[in-house]
Length: 514
Image (cartoon, rainbow, N blue to C red; front, side):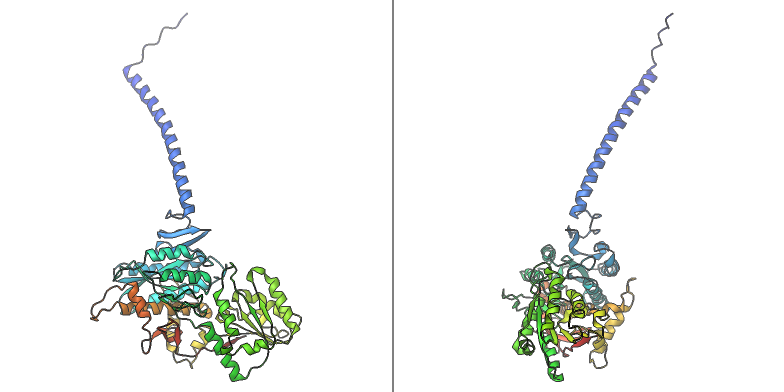
């Protein structure tokens, strides 16, 4: 028996069925669309993350002039755009600078300076803790300037050239594109650069690039190589207009040591150990400058070398075996001193090898430059009575000497120190960080730049104030002479109008560790 045919569906049922089919088709297509869009967005985010222009990507900053190169965030950055851009190690100091920058930029009465230096996440290359201490000192300079009854306020940017300074081209390009080129500046334009990195080829290349028209004035903090100043005599490639520095040169340091030897009638023989290149293979201008100063007959240390004739070249790329050979070889001749023309980064290994050399019971003194201020005074190699070893150098900014009653500028240092250890925007810095001297030198460089900015802001009528251009600030830096002094934490000083060199009010003093 056959079933009877079903009655035709009603108009409403047919309409409902059609709607369900359309909905199913729509949902399927929507899923496809969503998947495609998600893939596209993921791809864009991934590519952008690796290229570092996506503001929530790898460099964790919205600063437009920051790029990721070889796993480093380099370029020009405002900590207010992201305090993790340099990693956890720098977060606290960046939070302090960020808070200060936010306060300053609420108005339009501020000038912008940048601290240029190698900044790395951890003790890589020649950086170590240097950048952290530099940033702390620079921040105190900014903070104190903004609390003074002066015009203008100061915004501080960071110009990271990478952990070894090799990414300087990217950073300099950003600095130049943001420079104040007109008769006056806008708040966001850069009118001065401080820091400049260590005395190596990358730093001098960066300085020459910044000096080109329109020319950004520079105040170096711990550059000490001879001729690394306005004259440009460091490489005979011509002057570097606008490059000044607040540290004492290597030749002045060794001259102070020579005078100390004369006063104490120090005798003995010395061997020379010297490096010409950095671990990256580029010219190490600091080490080369020390070598030249040790060999300079005018400075008075060369006779100690002439008695032995020992001279050991050291390439840091060759590893510790070179240091071992040098430490063992000096036992073959009567040697009381090693004139060490190299970086402190390699000194702990060298001291350890000296401690274990065959003639370890013979006292020996390592004479070197200011970089030794980074040397740990508690290094076991300096406290073994069976292997007496000392390190002699002239510190650029020694807290003990600066806080001594004999220092005529003691109050300047104490005012800085008290500010340094006080809390600012929730950030606090350990007093121990002053020991390297880098925070002090960085503060002095920022103070010099700030003082020049404040003077350049004043018109013919003292009541007329305007944000100065980079050219106006550069001109002021060469007028710090006579009674027009910079009141830094390391003391009051002036700048030579011909060379841009620091002219010390007090004479550098050698120290010995331990």
